[in-house]
Each structure stands twice: as structure tokens, then as C-alpha cells.
Image (tube, rainbow, N blue to C red; front, side):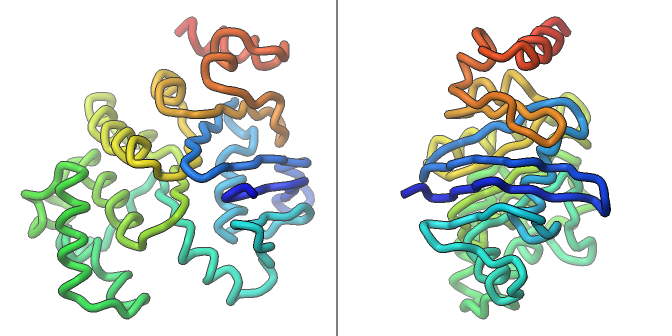
Length: 245
């Protein structure tokens, strides 16, 4: 049984279809890289999974349990097990780093504050921010704010982490510090779906890579095959252009 299993998933923006027949099995500990041209549906998959965009067809099962996206309670239960980090950090500007990471587990999950703070300190140390607990977001660099956002997602103890272009808004010199944090999560066995244009990183960290175009998965295989010996002509064309630059 797969940890997460997506079958025949479809979605649309109004009358415009954006996903068409997405099949994506995800095993526990998998790191799935989602690549492809802009508008191919990569980020839409993550948004549908989180219940931010309603699917129009297909199924999503989490450890064998079907997710009913029409049921608000079912979506809430899903979000207790799956977390997402977006391109924009969306930190609370009036809260310190530590408060940003602890607010949801304490206020929403009703967990003991002391226990949550201990865990949050450890998470922030893990992403290299153990000395920034009392800083406010506007006192941090973009890379540091994104690492706070990752720690905030991890504080909810998700089984699966979705990362949507988390380095796209960063200056090039800040990208590596965020990618280093994601590498640590991969080494720890966190199940992740990663949308990114950082092809070298996707190649390095992914157990499998899915290439999408026009709302479909054109090809999915291990990273080495996708980047070195793709079977499909469309994949070969995309990879050759990416690797040339």
C-alpha cells in the first residue's frame, strides 16, 4: 500500500482544464521531484492535494483512506497529516521566529505550550536558526524567512511535506541555505513532493522525478533516467534545454 496514491486526478480553473489524468503513487520516504515548463500543472497538483483547488475527477488516498474533498472535516484531517510550504513565506510580521513556529500547534492543535516550544527550538536549530528565536521576520533575510516557514510546517508533525517553488523568490546566494535544510529532511526520511526549477537539486535529492507538460505526467522515473536517458521526446527536449543553460 502506498503512503499517498493519486489516481486519474483532474482539475480546472473555471472552464480551463489544468490537470488531466494524473497518476502518482508515493511510498513512505519518497522524495518526488515535479518538473516541467511553467503552466504544466506542477503547483496545481500540490494545491489540489491540500484541498485549495477542488478536483473535478480522480481519487486521492492517504494510507489507503480515500480523501473526500467535498467534506470539510476530511480536508481538516488531511491537513493534520500533510503540510505545504509556498514560495511566499507568509510569516506573521508581529510575531517572533519562535512564536511563528509555535502558534499553530498551540492554538489550533491545543498542544502544551512548553512541549511545543521545546520542539520548535530543536526544529529551528536543525534549519540553522537556533540563534534567531527572538527576531522578527523583517530582521531576517529571505532565505532565513523561508527556513522559518519550513520549520513552521514541520512543527505540525506532517507525514508528507509539499514544497512549492520555495526558492523562487530568493536571491541566488540565499538559495543554497534553504536547499540544505531540505536535504536534511530527505536524509531523515521525510516524504516530500517538491516543485522546483532548481534542476541540479531535484536531480540530487529526488528518489523519482515526474516530468509534466500541459497537465499530464509525460514521464516518471528515477532522477538519473529522467535527466540522462529519458524515453519520451518531450522530456528529452525539455531536459536538453534546461541543461544547456
